[in-house]
Image (cartoon, rainbow, N blue to C red; front, side, top):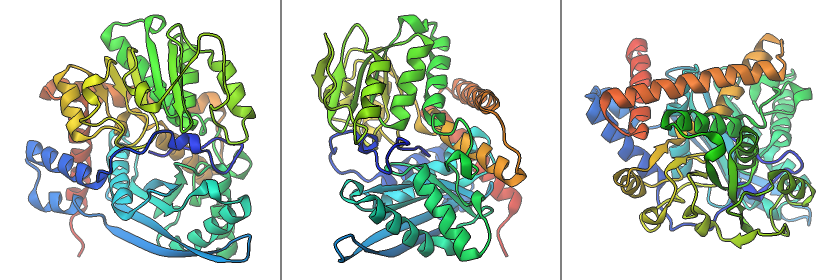
Length: 439
């Protein structure tokens, strides 16, 4: 998922809003899903083998001069899973849990996400293993610039275009664009997306992932014959994605009954005052929910939020939040995956057996990469759109993608996740077969 932290700080730990789940390997989950899909599609074994392995992996040492004069060395990664359908595209995260297998998995998920959305990109992902909360603004800047210099040989506007993700934001993208521009002696604003608007960023990009989640939710509710005004929603992870989704769904008429971040959650069965919560988060020095109080609002944990009584659950924090140990207790009828990989395979089976409808991440949170694509197009053309035009095109693509996945899943009598993966893998395989194998 390409997503962003809040604008006001370089780091918004609310995007990491969840207690650490038992360690699980997301890359293994992604490969198992691919193997299942390949078998169902009767995929050419050679194409299957290509898709099981990223095209390129780069691990780099990132030495940073800290404010106290000491040198600390961080480990960074950039993985390009597939460029069959176009330049690689994917976010950059700063988090202590970043490792090569996680980045591999997230890069593959970007490949499928771009294919589902029908945009001409392949998948990539990057990250630096660090605790951004401990770093000052200057340390984050130095870390970003050194990491950028280390991955420059494999990124570029027609090769691989990074974007914000967990604990990175437009300021981080601005540092990347400036670093590349200084080293190449020319302005290269199209090297990243999710930039500040004055540097060629797109209007509507900050809310794009959350807006896409809201659009998908509304489409599913329409298919299920449920009115927005009669729908209760719980959102885990009140960073950029979760807060935008909650705000837009609230504006659509849904009742947001629970939200949470790294500091815990808030619950009111009669509905939370989202505008007041957003004001509190904007004032909080770290953009957190902690310290918010209001009549009838109860404090809950992230784990409790996942099993709260609500029609729709939106996990918008980190991966593997819904697992075998809690999936049976989920009360929601519908799950919209705002985060990347929030549901394990075991949990997915439990939820499917219980009749819970799960809209997978590669469809539900594609809004960010769709508007990143719009930003890239605007940068290349040096012609920029107004926000209404951005949002109009975003809705068109998200609704079309939802309709295609829904129809494919119905035709093949499979859950939405499997339908989305089958459709995505088939499109990437078609591109690989058309291109052939070099040399």
